Length: 238
Image (cartoon, rainbow, N blue to C red; front, side, top):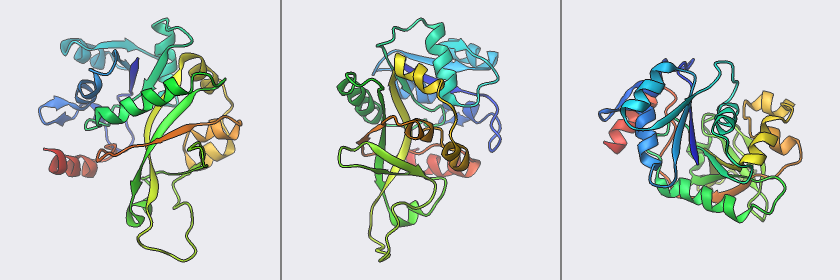
C-alpha cells in the first residue's frame, strides 16, 4: 500500500499540498502518479483534504493534528486501515507531484527482497552533481558496499579532500518502504541526537542500529518546498 502523508499547514509554503499543478491540486497529482502501482491512501489532518480526495475518487483517512513527522502519520493510517504486519507500506511525500512511478516501484521491489530482515526499511538515491550537493536542502547519503545507508546529511558528504568538481554524490529521495511491523518499530524508536541536529528522521533508525537499504534510481523529480521550487518544477515538467 502507498500512503501519502498530507499535512495541510507548512511553515515555508502555506497550504502547498493544495496548490494547482497543471490543473490538479498537488496532493492529488502525486496520488495519481503512483495509483497504478498499488492501492493509494492519503493520510491527512484536514477534512478539506478528505473531501478533495473523495472528489477525485482517492481513498483518504483522517489522522491526528499532532504528528511530528509524515512517518508517524502513515503509521497511524496503517493502523486505522488494519494492515497486516507483513504488508508493505510505502511513504510517498505529498509534495512530489512529478515523481516517476518507476522510482516508487524500485523501493517496493527492494522491500520485497528484504522481508527476511527483522527490520525492513528501504529508500532510494540518485546521482547528483557537486554543485547540487552543496545545497543543504538536497540531502546526501553515503552507503556501504551492500548499499545500506551509513549516514544521511545536509552537508556535502563524503568530503573530497582533493576537491574534484566532477564527483557525483548520492542525493537522497524521501521515499520510504517498510513492512507494517517495521514501520511500527521505527515510530516507537527514541528520537536521536543526530536526528535532532540534522532534522532528518531517518537517522533515528541508524542511531538505533537498524539498517536502511538503499536503491539507486534515475529521477528528475524533486520535492516542492517553496514557491520558487514550484515555479521551477512547472518550467521543467509542463
